[in-house]
Amino acid sequence: QIYDTSCKGVYDRGLFSDLEHVCDDCYNLYRNSYVASACRSNCYSNVVFRQCMEELLLMDEFDKYARAVQIV
Image (cartoon, rainbow, N blue to C red; front, side, top):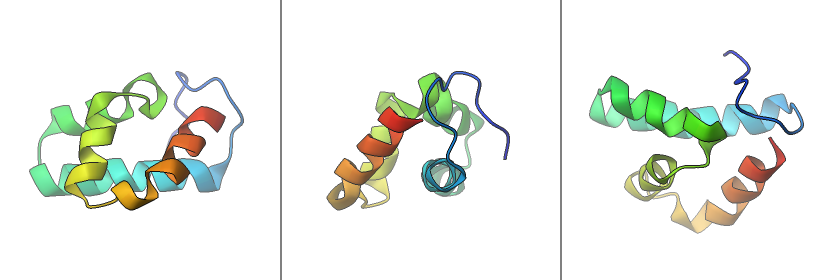
């Protein structure tokens, strides 16, 4: 995994790993390269990331991921 230069916060490998897993799992669900790149755009702060969380049934953990996005 490569550090995303659009992220201006603290580099935390664990947080990036959690965020990456959402995008990877979403890509595996749809097999669409747009989903993979859009999910990561703007350092994960975008509507596609949120939609991926909904599709992957992760909304009960939304606050955890929202904090991670703010940190990175």
